[in-house]
Length: 315
Ligand code: ACO
Image 1 (spheres, rainbow, N blue to C red):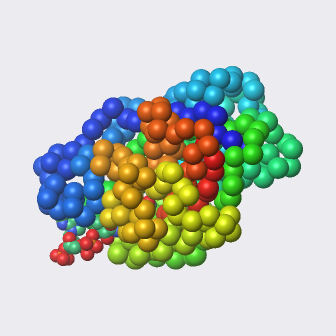
Image 2 (image 1 turned 180 degrees about the vertical axis):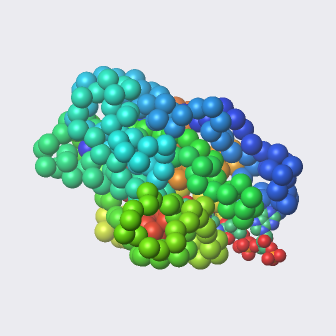
Image 3 (image 1 turned 90 degrees about the vertical axis):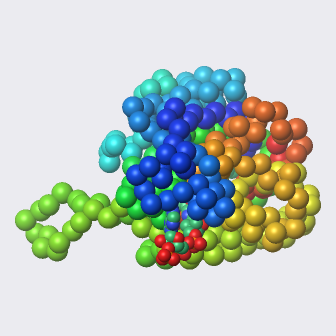
């Protein structure tokens, strides 16, 4: 399997830290040093499904294939307007594909998990072209009264087209259940048989626990792959890490002992867009012409669950 096309879309509404301080007890002086975020793109009159479809079309154009050439669509998403049908089915119709579709919810690590599922289908000889699209609107998951959470996130969609090739060197998936550290709950339809009280709970986060998990999990996943492949950190040309927080990225970079220029970032202008973060960054770097054929890339992401994953691939 190899990545032959990428695409991404951001909502047009930009919300700066100063804009947040107009209705929250917060400031750029608090947010920027702790997170590296200056502003984020937030959905206003867009629909997430349209952004997912647009990112997919861009990735298909970039790969030079048509929607009807696709053998599978995998969509990574935590929440969107529909509980059912799946976002991948909505995207399929919007772009004019006819292939099987599936959605996964692996929180912020969704892109890595989707790559792993796709790779299994390539290895089984079942597919020739797969679209992975990660579309997220965490701005609709957080309470905009909770300054400790809402300031961290932004919305967006990122997509990648995969075709046959030998470019994936290794993928590592990890999970360690810790459901009280990062979660959101919603009320389900009532029934005559459910007696318990239920309530909507917007995204809750134990920030320092998440921070520690993120650094440990991402560093561990990347190190595992490097060791397994007989590589060292210096062999990787580009590290594309989940764009949650600049301090987390810097801690992983310290662990790997690698220079800053190997770690492209967009957290400053995007915030954390959950599973869309990695493919959006991948697309932005791809379109800037950063990657040359033969470059070794390491992608790594972590999120609620806890769940994490990394991939090492040749561009
Ligand atoms: N503005 C001003 N003050 C704030 C804000 C804010 N936006 N948020 C919290 N504070 C206050 C708190 O109320 C607290 O005040 P107190 O001391 O009077 O009680 C103080 O700042 C310190 O709060 P902490 O939570 O201890 O701050 P910390 O230094 O841990 O930084 C942060 C918080 C930035 C969230 C940090 O823990 C972090 O980066 N964690 C990782 C979060 C993350 O990346 N999550 C997403 C990854 S998973 C995924 O992608 C879904």
